[in-house]
Image (cartoon, rainbow over all chains, first blue to last red; front, side, top):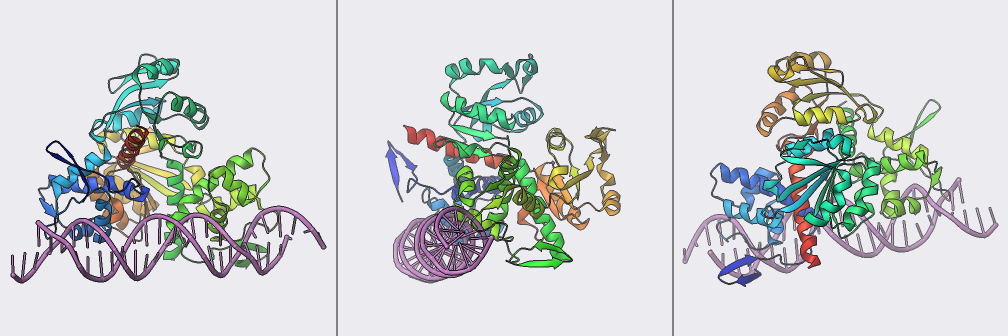
Length: 227
Length: 227
DNA sequence: TAGATTGTTAATCGATTAACAATC
DNA sequence: TAGATTGTTAATCGATTAACAATC
């Protein structure tokens, strides 16, 4: 097990610099299940038990966790609450990434209202839209500002995350500017394929349309094969 | 190349029954790019050119497409518009899967308004919520009905897709009932991990919270590595 | 101590990439 | 015909699973 000693405290560190995207994408799911287990009073769990609940293999769970450190104990398993907290820390839910939202239409407003940003490591500090749509509105206590103030706002506040709830073309146009202004991560709800053009920026595309078409394929497939 | 002859018409068929989920998930992206290319007047394209635009390898594109049939022509490439239509047909955008939405709160309403169901193979025929929230509302011309009418509605109309915009527990409770009523595909916006408990049902989970936490991890990673 | 379960190495499986013969 | 590019087979790479020694 690798660790750094910081004063009296032992801090777990990733064993290797590179963690595959497959592993990272599974972490929030572990976090959800462990949270529920912890809440329902489960104190310890073995990789085998957890695998049974999550429909994974015990091997995979142990491999995944060991990317970040040895959180278990031989012969015992894992302490549910400790592991929950460790994964939360790994995911960075204790950070407060300064976040702005661009586009406060129907979708943007819903996202802003719906998401639990605080408990996921984000701090929504600004919402922007065209002046006529901003118009003194505020969502979740955050004032909706004229998009023209974006530049000065970013230079002053230095947000690192941008949530894009704007159309295709607007996203394509705005992205390079936002990166220039210091944005390091995008949560992109537009159809535009943000990842194609930039690197050294974290991008999560929520392509609802793609998801729906995948569902269409698979449902049709199931209906066909049942015949 | 495998094909069936139906009268004069040659219909492309999948070469093997099993198409991996990785391939299926890439199809909507091909569809988007080919649609844009077609719209901007591009007539033919080689796998190499398309790979350049989409940041894929030409090999992968050819492999992916050849799961479904030989749509190209040696020495020439692919006809953009034909390929676009083929992929649309494969995805089933020409079908009209009868669809219901359960939960017409903020998120449900936005999804119902926002998505282009018709052009993706879906026909939204019913929206359900608790009586006091239904209350004569209609979204997109679809009447919001009392959840108590769900049973009789499904037995009569036989929808095959359910969009779940309800909380965790409600989703877990309702899922088996919906499957019993003939639902074959779920578009699930709740935190509940639908896939774990059922098979022979197509499930697309939109776990926005998971996506956000992944973004947190990756953004923090980028910020750290820049230091 | 004996039993259980981890952390880790080795084996397997699947997906991506490379290569090339077929052919338009 | 010659050049280009596919469809497809073979090679590589990465991710998952199995096995087992270490150890609590």
